[in-house]
Length: 425
Ligand code: PSV
Ligand code: MN
Image 1 (cartoon, helix red, strand yellow):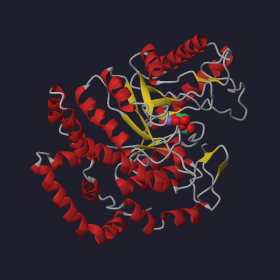
Image 2 (cartoon, helix red, strand yellow):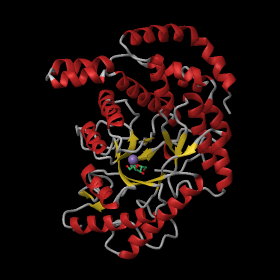
Image 3 (spheres, rainbow, N blue to C red):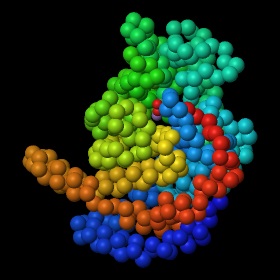
Image 4 (tube, rainbow, N blue to C red):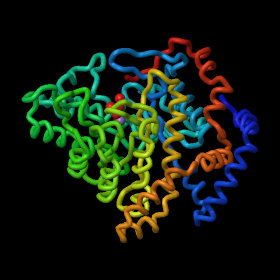
């Protein structure tokens, strides 16, 4: 386990330079009327859940290349998320995928999480794959299936996932349905949607009062002609039909190219129906690339709507922040460190936007000033703020540097083996 002493020791090598950078930024921001202490507090509070399935190298349909030292068990996955949190202080939760992560000994798993100062975020059900010994196949759908017996099996699975989540202290379930069709005529759109709505209503009804259901949407893949829950409108419609416990979850990769995701976010917040996020980045579709690696400005614009919406739309409950990415060309833990930083940076930059001035510029239709206000914030290097917050909390000034210097991957390869495989896609 990486100790705080080791982190502090490595921090010392760059502490002087950091102090200079932080002081100069803090002075500049203070002059602009920004309260740096409040800002640091907001960054400290921002916690992102790490998906258990992103800890091993992911794959494409053409192949999977292991990185070595992948976590073989749930305990090892908790260990890895614990490491990310020790370094960043911004990832205090793990999101489990069932049945990839069925906990055998609940008490042991809970204690392991507590030891790493982690909690369990949303649990994810899986009706997009068939499991060994499963009675009915999901080849032609699950919650939308034409056969009631298949739907009932999928509903029962979701109920079981909620039960597992409850025993771990989780408070929400995320459902992503792969259901859809590959060819025109294969599905009756109305009937498939109606059956899905019915199944989701049964699941929501059975959930504990303080639980939330997050409904993902995705336009295509694995089905290539139609997806039953294809877009935010369909997810929103279903969330409304399921009542106050149900919300839409925005996975950034689940949009067609150039979709204005920030506008979707604004609309959902206004309606009090935004549940949370699956962060990733993409060039074409559900590429699952490192957050902020392709379109950082787009991420910033999303956070601009979030900062405004979280302050304005009190009807919307606190949001669930999750990463959903998976790699086969990067060390997955390094990739997650980069993703966590990208999220924090976008949030910090969005917090710098002068909302009052923006409102005024909008009122006067001062289009140029609107853009200036956004881009001034976007162009500010906020990294010293994030480093300062981490330094104060006992985290790493440079998480990637500490990760590499302390040879975390090599340690894992030694302990778990060069060919260790992690459950997931
Ligand atoms: C599907 O593409 C998805 O985004 C869903 O959230 C799944 O649960 C996750 O990826 C893992 O396969
Ligand atoms: Mn997702």
